[in-house]
Image 1 (cartoon, one colour):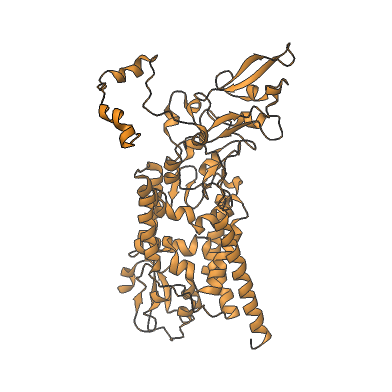
Image 2: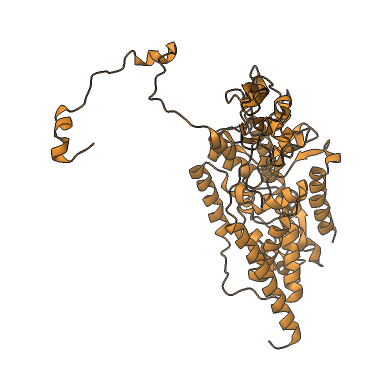
Length: 249
Length: 261
């Protein structure tokens, strides 16, 4: 350091570089992938990410300000739209303006032409936590049931006898996974401190049984057995000799 | 000064039109894709190219928008996007100013090659295809900054600060003229754009103020030597060289044809 001026310059430079390096490090280390809901028509996350140009036209089109663009710190991919059901759910506009405005088909334009349109969406699925749902305690609450735009279709009430009091009934909310569109209105309406009913992305909760099961009670499904090869291919010797050869499988 | 002021006015004006929701009747969207006056779609052709490679499908709305933008820059304006529209230009110009005022010397460890950006460009396109993801769009600092300004968040300021630091302390003009694949893309398509900076050697007094201020110094190789238009696509048409020239040796020129007669 020759003089104070140079010292200030170098100090300023070092300070700025450290700060920006620190910021980049926080970004790199921040690896938590929270869950998030995508706007209507973005079922397939991979397809959606490959098409989204991150223009924010869907955000502008949403009349309820439901959609937000992810910033650098949000866990969804930077710049892509998402929404948080507890804050602002999707109100299922009939003309789906967000899909209409999307320039790249990232929000699938098919929904605009489909017969039932908005009711065929699959943004997520409502999952009920029976431990914290007060209806499961026996307290009468049907906030989510009444909030559901597909009342009695996606969200039904199941009546069950309350054995504890022996004279009251439980009115239990039950979600039909085939019908639920994942708008999040139930999550928004839930009265508990943290919502007892939450909308999660479908791939987080749904399982898949595989194609090896044939439903005997389903005529269509049983057709698959028509040309099936039923001749057994098991090796008889193997079943007999497995103790000797120690080949259990 | 007039080009500088005009440039800042255009840059901020576009951001304002997109940003204020009271001005939604003029423009909606952001610099990646927008709709002007509810009818004219405009899209970033580089982003469009990545999306086509990533999804292997083409959508009419974004295609027409990308074609309009690509046509305007390729035929008329050249790489003017970098100087007249991109908000990163504000940051890097500020960084260049600070760098000059404080007299920071460039780091000995960070030496970037001019053609690095073309490599980044190719890498972005190849990776977009391989990963089925518009790669540059997902990390784009241009996207982060312009979206941050337009949709009003705070986190873009950190990114802007990092860009500022890189440009002013590590390597001069590192982001815009060495790294940015979008700039490289526009440089490639705007090789034959009509708007050019023309140099008149008979007026030149060889003060080289223009080279000193030019963000892409290599395009002004002819200064003081011969009368010639800047033909490289890398010229961002910022007009800084025209402003600093006291001898009328540099002018904007739409068509070479006119001056030859």
